[in-house]
Image (cartoon, rainbow, N blue to C red):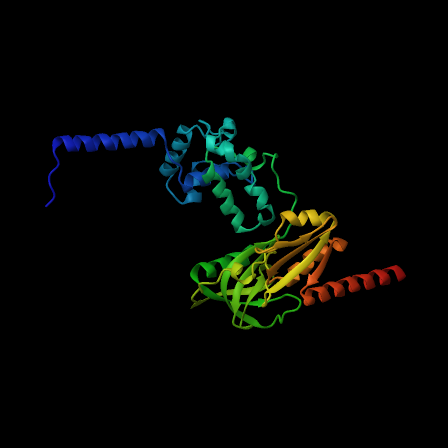
Length: 351
């Protein structure tokens, strides 16, 4: 049987509760719903008839209007929202974008450019999650325009790539539930009529493209599928056990050249000259990359990787400033590509 509290203990508990409530009132914390409201308010509605008012947010969050009023009162108490509606909508204060915490001032360039780093995936559901993350990092920079476009640290323009969000949602659901999926693959080299059954391991974002990394029962192998070329996706009720080594990074053999894997790890040796010589000193194509030798004119690097096709493409990008020395399969592929380009150039000249 618990001991009854004395009057002094009861009073101390009451005082602690009141102090805690006062601190909460003076220093309110934003929750997920608050961040969502701020995120919505930073961008005008697509239709001018839409008003960001209590009815809108009650319907959006599926809560009562008194709940929305409490949210609004809290945000106003934090000096984030205007006291009155603007054109029938709640509005973020104009001065909010100039308010930064000391910690944010140190990291603002990085935070401001999360959007830029992900601009090539802006049409995926992932971007929405990152936008929300920005508000968690600094809720008081609620308007967002200055935060997301400081302009002093930027990402160069990226290749645009439309991602099939319907496919994304279906595959992501299967990944969350560890369920097999069925689909047809429509790449030019694939048999489009075959229904593939796979165990989805990961969604991989690489250079503007989204891939599914999965074990294929059809191929009896772990394969990368371009999400946009997957048709008629069905999430089955059949569950699978995710292996401990499911991560794509375990299949690259130490390579750092994006979403590609070979079945065999090769040892590479490449000679670089010109500007490529200096560039390679500060860039790694693989985890174990080493400089084997260097003189005034050239640099030879060695590394191991299971991404030979990607290595070939990177070598070709450098033109005459990169020459593969090993393995022999890479040397031969490089020569064949150069010979093919030369033949195409001669044909074009003759025409």
